[in-house]
Length: 452
Image (cartoon, rainbow, N blue to C red):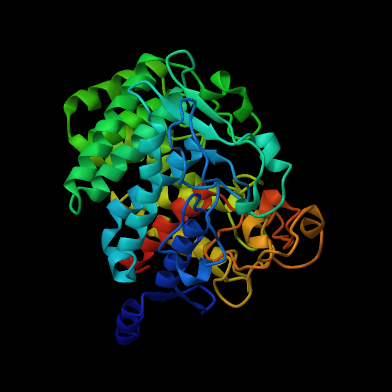
């Protein structure tokens, strides 16, 4: 048994509950491929498995002609949303910070840094002034009316900016968190870039705090897609990451003051809209404060022992994109395990849930991973056959599988009864987004590092 466990660790694979064996390193590398497939702009250095992606949206610009090319498309569409992108980058960075050893064992540390940098480079572009950041590029309604290749887009892609007259503390606070966390990731390999990220994070958190408001109130166009419920949690989250990046007690004192001002209490699991339990996990680790440990313990115990599950055992947290919520719970509760908070219970939950996602039921919910996985995700660019073939809504409504494999994309997952239909038309369960893979990828790195 000891020999088997040693061999399993060397292979960076573990036995799942039904005896299946998963190569977590391969899953991480495929997840990184998903992020490559989401890239906008002039592409270079892409893996051959995503060579079907071409240069696109090369005229994206701001109000004053600022270069807003590059960055990431949000999901199966072609809008660039700063808010959820920033959350995805924060989660990717958190995983790279906590589980650098796991990424290194997987041979993927350079890959995750490159993934993060493609996003943070764009955030630096979008941050056009001390009190400015572009919230969005592309009109959501016009974009969603189009089914085709990104390089064939021939309609306007307006940019929407947050500034002192149009505040967005949720977006600016999350962008500050993304840049501050990324500054830690790059601190040991590129000190100059790390300092640039940190300086921008400091400007953005000040903007978020001094000019308060929800981005959706300033830019109604985003309401249908990413309407934040409040900015309180992002403001505290941003300051918390600045404290982690700098160890400056001034930021910690601001965190405490804002928690009191907002009477901040977590109301749900970690997501693009709700950061409070993530903040408490960070504070429990950095400060040892028992109050935050208790909140973390309650959340994870509830998830492990009381939360609704499907008949086959998957946590049911929401219907739309449930698996990304599950992955974020697992990431959060691995932080609890790190603090020796019900460590065995939390690690068992991680093994069970990741086993379900990766194939314990005979079906993998990660595209291109395993032998039985989705072939028709709700995703425009991968669905479209190469030019000059036509790609439009007729193809969307057809039974044809996607023309290209969207390697590494985590699906939203099945419904509460384990039912899942591999079809482009069921966007709530088959459309991947940037934030779906972020926490999930960190959990994979954790499982390698911890030998789970």
